[in-house]
Length: 505
Image 1 (cartoon, rainbow, N blue to C red):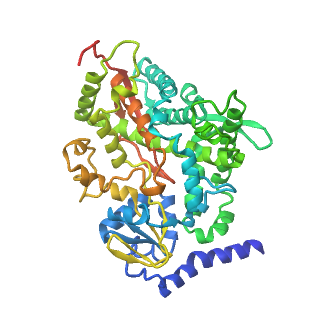
Image 2: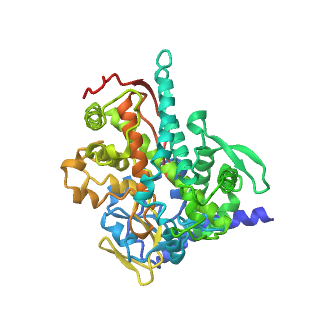
Image 3: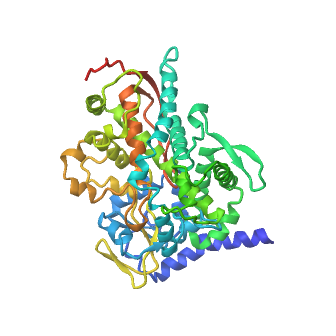
C-alpha cells in the first residue's frame, strides 16, 4: 500500500503538478522561453534527464545561445546568463536567500555552505575569516611543500620507468588535492599520492575504523544531491524513491571519513596550537575557546575538504592539460619560470614569493578556470518579496534564479573565441571587461572563502610541474563530468624530466 501511495504521489509530483503550475502561471514565467524545446518549463524531469546524461551545463549553454539571456530551466526556475545578473542576484545587499536545493545535502548541523540563514552564515564566515586570510595561508607553505614533494616523486617514478609508461595525471592531481586539503585542514596528509590510490580511513560513530574510497564517496554523494535537489519541494519524496542510489552509502562513507580525521586531530597534542584550519574551530584569534558542538566542527571540515579537493583538482587538471596542449603557451610559461627560478639540482620546488606575482603563470591559471570551470552550474537563489529586476527583466518574488557559471565564462561578447585557451587575453585584453564576467569563486557575501588557498595551491603546483616536467597527452583530452561540480575525467600522458642545464634560460 505504501509503495502504491509513493508511486501515485510521484506521478502527481512529476507530471500533473508541474502542468498545473505552468497553466496557472502565477509567477508570470511563460514570458521566458524554456530550455529543452519547452519541456523545462513544464517538468523538472528535463533537468533530471540532463543531469543523468552529463549534459546539464552544455544543454543550458545551448539553450542560452538559442533563446537569449533569460531562460526557464524548470517550472519555477530561471537561468540568467547576462553578467549583470551576478551582482543583481549574488551581490552585497541583493537580499536573495539560498534556494531549498541546499537542503538536499544538509544534515542536522548546517555548514557555512548550506545554511540558508543569513545570520548563521555571517557567524560561521567570521569564525573562519582569519584561517583563510592570505597571511595565514602563506604561513602554511611548509605544509604545502610537503605535499608537492610527494607529487614530484610520483611523477619522477613514471618518468623514469622503462619504456613509455602512461600516467593518469588526473588521478595523481586528484590525490594531491586531497592530501593538500588534509595538510591545510588537519595538518596531516591523507597519504593518497604516496599510496597511489584514494582509499582512506573512515570511522563510524561507534568507533569502527575501515577503508573507504574518498573520490567515489564524494562523486556518488554529489550525484544523489543534485538529483534529489532538482525539485526541493518534493525532497522528502525523492529521497525515499532514491534510497537505493549508491550516493546513500557513499554519503555515510564520506561522513565517516571526515569523522575519522576529526577524531584523530582532536587526539593530537596541543590541538588548538597547530597551524591548520581545524584549530580555528577550537579557539578564536584571541586564544579564547569556542566550545563548538562536535557536529558543527564535523560539517565545516566536511565542506572544506569536499570543496577544496574537488574544485582545486578541476582547476589543476585544466591548467596542466591546456598548458601542455599548446606548445606556444608551454614555451612562454617555462621561459617565465626559468627566468624567475632557474633549475638547480636538488631544488625542485620554488618558494611562493618567487612565483606569486608572475603574470603569465597567473594568466594561465585564470584561463584554466575560465575554459573548464570547477563549478559549471548556477547557484540557486530565491527572488525576495516584491520581485526584482534581474539584468533588465522583472522577475516575480519566490522564483528560483541562478547564473550558469559555464555559460557565463564562455560568453563570446566578453571572451573572444571563448573555446580557445588563450592566457594572453588576461595580459593584453580589456581586463575590466573580462572581470565583468569572470566569477569562478562566485560573488558577494557568499563567495568562496577559500579563494586565497586555491590560488596558493594552484600557483605552487603548476609552477613546480611545468618547471620540472614535459608531458605528451595520450588520446583526445578529457571529459568534464558534471555532478555538483564539473569533475575532470581521466587524463593519460607520458612524462619526462626537462633537460634544461643549470642556469640555462
